[in-house]
Structures are given as structure tokens and as C-alpha cells.
Image 1 (tube, one colour):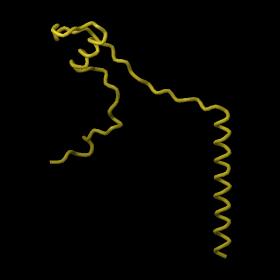
Image 2: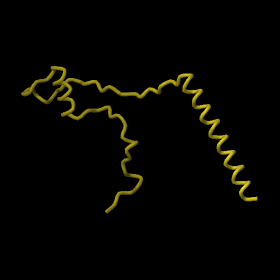
Image 3: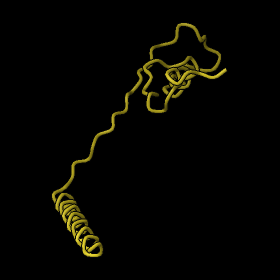
Image 4: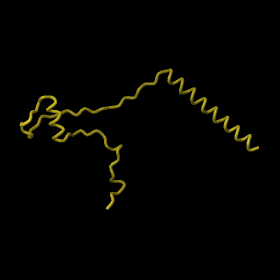
Amino acid sequence: MTIDRSLRIRRGSMGNRNVLTRIERLKKLAEMDRWEEGDSVFGLAKVRVEKVSMKRKKKSKVEEGEEELLTAEGAEGAEGADDASNASEE
């Protein structure tokens, strides 16, 4: 039996989780030396989950100028191509 399209998990919908599994918590606690092998796995300490946010890079003025030149050249090239195609049709 197939899964309905609306119920499928997409890669884009897999965001940051705010809850860790017990194994993930044990690994983090072991890294911070707050848990050792043989300790109880019940009543574990809380572990903070850091959210990673992607910051956009600001464009420098040089890059903005280059982009404007490229878009202007692209528009001129497209107009020239249109003129050439119109000339060949006549």
C-alpha cells in the first residue's frame, strides 16, 4: 500500500528538533563530563539544544555593481538577439 502524497515527509519539512532522544542526551552529557558509563539513565539532567540559524551575507558595493553590469549586458544581448531574429524573418 502506498502513502498519500500529503502524508509524505519532505526534506524541507525536516527542521530543527527541540527534543533529543535519550541516546543523544547521553552523548552530550558524556561530552560535558556530566554522565559516565554505569550511571543511571533515568533522571538525566536537561541538555540545551542549540538552534543553528543561517545568516545571509551582505553584498559589498563591488558585487552589486558587477551584478548590475551583468543584468544590463544580458538585457542588451537579448535585445540584439531579437533584432537579429527579426531581420532574418524579413
